[in-house]
Amino acid sequence: MFKINKMDLLVSIYIFCVVVAELMGGKTFFIADIGGFHLNSSVSIFLLPIVFSINDIITEVYGKDRTRSLIRSSLIVIILIILFSLLATKLPASSRFLTNEKAYETIFNISIRFSLASLAAFALAEFTDVFIFSRIRERFGRDNLWLRNNVSNFIAQFIDTTTFMFLVFYILEKSFIDNLGFIFGLILPYWLLKCFMSVIDTPFVYLGTKWLKNCRKENI
Image (cartoon, rainbow, N blue to C red; front, side, top):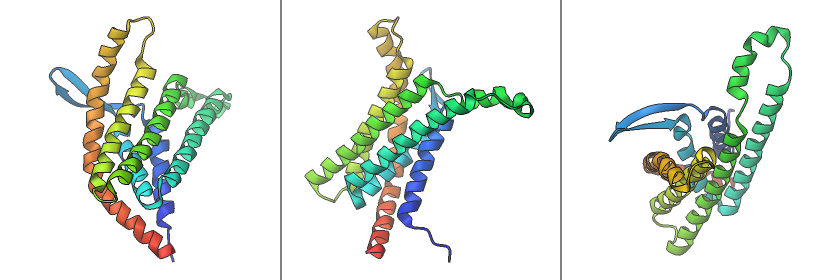
């Protein structure tokens, strides 16, 4: 009989989102013109809200220590992706593969600055999300899951976006004011878009929590 443990499936989806966001998140697409500002987004905008939602689901059912263990495991996965990408692009290609080598390097020769920025932003945001979610639940009890889900996600997503944008786009040769104006012009619309995605995901957090709780009861 075909059977999948619900927790295993949830962790697999989490790792899938982390890996795909790391490998394919460099592509951006146009969304809209807002007051003359061209709003673009990384394709990872569809994956990151899922990651934060799974954080909240697992924290709600199994507690913050279980989620922190998953985050640490994901950080190791990102580091391994970076290291193997560097190895794979540095190895000399065989004669049969030479025609594809340039395209291969273009796709997988990850920028160290982008990768380290992504790693730092992910770590800070994920642990912040779990911390805030847990503190709100301790303060207000187990009711109002929507509140702790969205508040923790809004704050964590802001930290994620701000950390990444500053590490990638801050130019030392320019003044702090110049950098601040340019970078926040990127941060605010992107963060608001992430918040909107978080709100949309809220019903799925409720469904996922109920689904995982039933799995836990079955195991007990």
